Length: 168
Image (cartoon, rainbow, N blue to C red; front, top):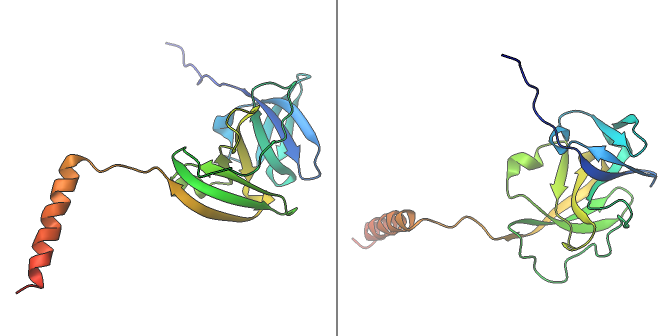
């Protein structure tokens, strides 16, 4: 029996360096945050190993022909997507908002993956290396886990039992 390597999926990206130079190419998103180097297959077919500290942001785009710069960097109202609504301040003082997964283990990585405010634009997701950020603030928690009916009943019994402790 042959050993098969895991199938990889490369997504269209525009990698923007700290100095603002964009590089179009393809990237396997599963490898992000696993090392200090990002391997990009450029549109010309060449592999480029980019140091994560030299990257400002990685835009996962639908099409290369359309612009990758965000038309809106903030939400017009409270977002509807589940997750943490955050405001990022970059080292170059640029500011933007986005939604990150409500999983604190993801935030301990080498960067932040987020959904930008304009869901209908060319940019679907972004990866921001931690080294490019000066600050990240949580503006709100959107959505959340719902309690099951059983958990709600159990919680009610605990509250009723504890309330009797102080009435005697």
